Each structure stands twice: as structure tokens, then as C-alpha cells.
Image 1 (tube, rainbow, N blue to C red):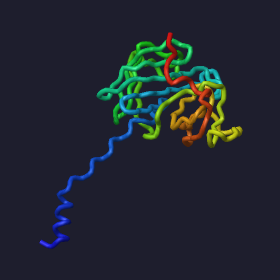
Image 2: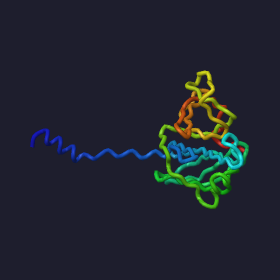
Image 3: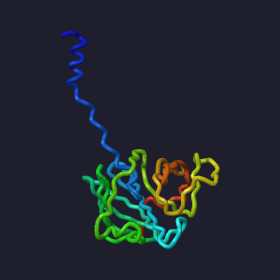
Image 4: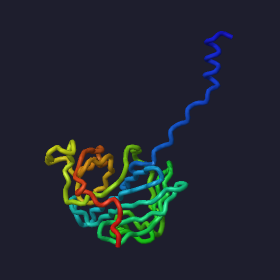
Length: 202
């Protein structure tokens, strides 16, 4: 057998490289999820106009969550600044996410239906393996800058209770990604523009 034939035969017998596992981090409708190892964090933000306006909707549902994944499930704690944490369970696989809470977060039953009676579920809209965390915007308006030291302009910006993903942290600045209705906007905001990464201790 010629040398080239031997090499071709050996290549045919070599095992194919394993396909990379799909990233569980990403956007699931109004829920942003970031997975680092077994740690999972999330930020949920949804509004319904009702008798209000787009700028001031009548109902809103916003909270954060964190937990430790094991076998595609996690016992989690959900919270919003200034409110008591609410426990729940998260299911997260390549098929999608499901979320069940012991009590509904304020406003959520009016925007997405109760998360107590039956699980809230969604498939993944967009994978985002570079996300390292998730937060909510804490200030009324936060202008997104092109760099940590850049002077803020007028746009683009995010507003209070918008859910954002964390990409990097540099001193007092945080690089975020905001999945808007048309495209994902990335840039830098002040760390003080974001809610804390964990619930406040009682």
C-alpha cells in the first residue's frame, strides 16, 4: 500500500472531533441567562402597556435570579432591589428554559401570567457564550459609552429595569449587552447604573 493510501486510510479511521455543546447563555424572550461553570444568573424584564404608554406601561415585571445548575435544573432565588427574595426552580437545557416560583414577583402575573400555577417557559432566541453575568438597570437612564473613559452622548441608552448582560468589568465601568428589538447594543456604563449582582442580606 502506498504511503498516501495509508495516510488516507488512517484519517478515515480517526475519530471525528466532538461537537461543542450548545451555549445555554443567551436570550430566552424577556429572560437573559448567563452560565459560568455551574453558576447561573438571570435578569427578567417584561412590560405591558395596558392603560399606560410605551414610555410608562401600566404593568411591569422585573427581577434577577441566581442558582447552581445540576443536571439541567437549579434551585434559585429571585429578587428585586428593596423587596424580599422569592425562591423557585429553574430548568435549563438546550431545548429551552422553564421557571417556577413559590410566589409571583410583583407585576409578573399581569404581564406574563402566574409563574406559580404553571412553569413559565421559553426557547432560546439567541445564544451568547460570551456573557458572564446579568443585571437590571437601576437608574432612570444610563447612556451606553463606546469605552470606559468615553464621554457619554445622548444615545444609545437603557432605562430603569431593562435587562442587560455583563461582558466585562473594568474598575467602576461595566461592559454590557442590551438585546434591543432590532439589534443587540454593546458598550460601557457605570457600575452604579446597575442593580447589585446578589440580593441584599436581611
